Length: 132
Image (cartoon, rainbow, N blue to C red; front, side, top):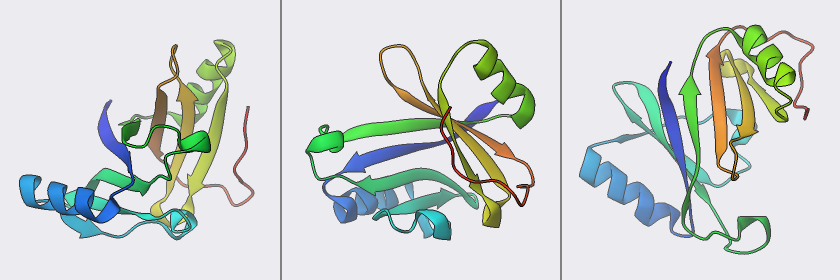
């Protein structure tokens, strides 16, 4: 397992992008089509996306105006990990990104921090986003 990415939620998308590009020499890169409805950017290092930046309005479900939104861990064994979450009674949601050949599980740690498990696995054709 290793850190896959972290996501920053901000009102200042452009300023945050420029900051990470300048300070850490990150480059703008592609985002999957499935998430382009969310304003933001993916910043890359060594050909891999490391920092995801998404917009916030600062109210409603986006009550935290500036925050680390979630942290993603790249691990192996999608099916076994999903079964483990179910066995432990941990609620999760799924996201399959076919164009990246990645499957993702989102769940919360005690106290509320959002975590994402990212798996490099082929996406079955019959999948969709769901919540458990």
